Image 1 (cartoon, rainbow, N blue to C red):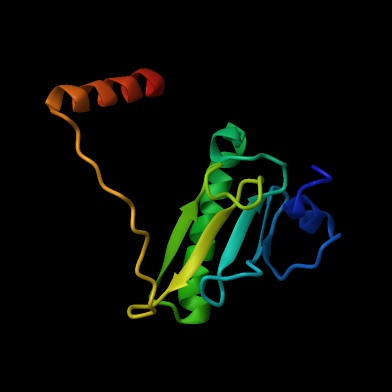
Image 2: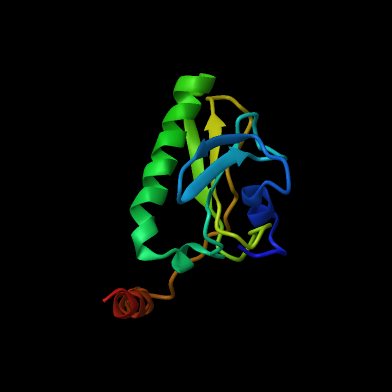
Length: 138
């Protein structure tokens, strides 16, 4: 636990939250500023900042909990689907790993994210980027 972290404070019961799922390793609660009603945040109980920091032994459970929540927003809220996302550092409003599950319905008004697009100079540059990633991924 990190005493300066708002999510750790929620997990400790020091800040009120509407919990929707709790286990020994994870908790999920409603976002206080939802994109749409029913927007859920899934967090590990262990204070980690980003997805790369999540211990390997927690990865499968984290994804399994995310699947359950994505199913729940459809079955429980009548959503047609969901938007599932994790920000790592950039746009991460709380420095504690959290996965968003946002209920979606066709025509809900969310237009998605307008990511700027770019182009590689040529196939050689594209290959260099691929090689750099392969080197890290092994």
